[in-house]
Image 1 (tube, helix red, strand yellow):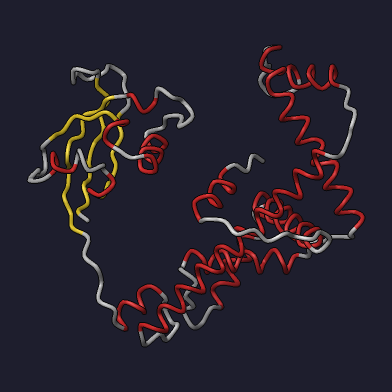
Image 2: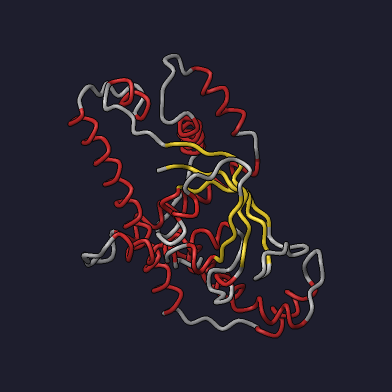
Length: 288
């Protein structure tokens, strides 16, 4: 469970630093390294270094995480072949907290949790709420793709490609416009579909809903903890309401949420048993 703060520096196969190569600071648990590398870390102190190749130093799950954190493309088969020198900048030990009221209050402030059983129920409820939310997102993703994949629309392709090329603040090349067009056309299709659904279902958002959203956002910054007299929150929310960008983005967010809530009620969802890893993979591949 030891934590290592390290500086990554890209090297070649012989350990020489690559000019202009990747450099990145990070924190890693020793257990993130695979079993062949861990013995090399034992006894190391601040300032010590080790040299490694990503493909050989980390197993699949941790390798994917490290590759992404280094700014590499995890779909690039050559990313894992890169070599790095790791310099240890700090060594720490993670100790498990005692299961007591002080710990429960730190994790769930103002909830009045007194026992381990109550704490476990709170954790369980949090996990359930997380997966309920993610399951809803997955259903909404399938609704989105069903609507976009099964709705035919004819667009003036030539005109739109010329607009992509010349209509922005910065002109694009013909190849860039060609490459961006499929994504643009799909977004345009969804915009037209959602506009029709919003109109048909008479979905509106009033200012109080936006203000309530602002308050919830403020509370989330505070870990959901109330400070007793929250009159200051109204004043802060009122200031947020004067931010045109915040109001417009929040309006669209609430409006879209309302639309999908209605759409969820119009489909028959089929429950599926799935592992947490496979489910995370489904959520990860949302592409809109």
